[in-house]
Every structure is written in structure tokens, then in C-alpha cells.
Amino acid sequence: MKYIFIIMMLMNFRSYSFTVRVTGIEEKKAPVYMAVFETEDGFPYEVERGIFVWSGTPAEAKKGVVTNLSEGRYSIVIFQDSNGNGKMDRWFWGKPKEPYGISKAIKKPRRRPKFQDGAMDLDGNSVTEIRLWNP
Image 1 (cartoon, one colour):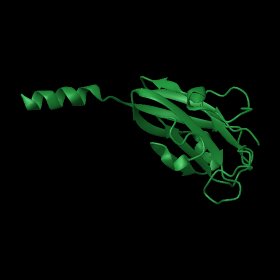
Image 2 (cartoon, helix red, strand yellow; image 1 turned 45 degrees about the vertical axis):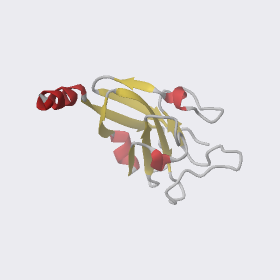
Image 3 (tube, helix red, strand yellow; image 1 turned 30 degrees about the vertical axis):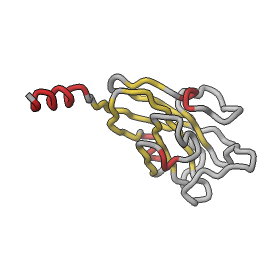
Image 4 (cartoon, helix red, strand yellow; image 1 turned 30 degrees about the horizontal axis):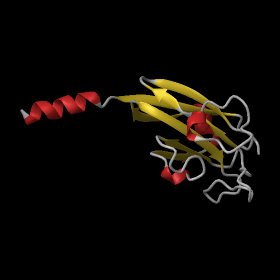
């Protein structure tokens, strides 16, 4: 009986291929960082709190970053680390100093983005593009 329960639980956890392509990259050498968040905790500046964190070259980011995620609601933040210190640098009032982008942003954010601003539902294999905005 307990094995049937375990099998039923495993059947409910579907994993989907999720590809993120980055556009608007101008600097060719600085690494690109991406973090996927499933809650507002740490979003958007504490990249290390994301459930999936990736860093790589601009060429890799343009080609697409692939991860497997279960069904759910996610928000993504991307930034290009122009000075190579491994974090998103910000002015004292909070605005990023480096190129950045969030999921679902069709124009440059004018205020600190909230989790809900970029939240998107994943319920199947998906591809999305996120544009980097210059600060």
C-alpha cells in the first residue's frame, strides 16, 4: 500500500524543460548571471537565493540556458556582471549599475521589480526570452 502512495506522489511531480535566451547583450566579455525564484524571498537582488542559479558567457546566454523545473510559478532575474565581482551592483537608492532584466519585462523597469511583475506559470516545456536593459 505504501508503495502505491509513493508511486502516486512521484507521478504528480512533472519536470519540464525550461529554456531562457538572453537578448540585448552589448558587452561581449562580462559573465551573465541568471536566477530563478519561486517566491519573492530574495527577489530580485539576492541571486544566490534563487532555486536555480546559473552563470556563463554572453554567447551561452544568447544561445539559451536550459533547466528542468516542476510545474509552478516562477520569476527570473538576469544581470551582466560588468566588473566581475559576482554580484549585481546597485546605486545607494537600489537601482542596478549593471545591465539587468526580469522575465515578462517588455520595457525597462522604472522601479524595483516585484516577484509578481515577472511571475510566469510553467506547465509544460517552454522557451522564453529576457532582454537586458542598460542601467
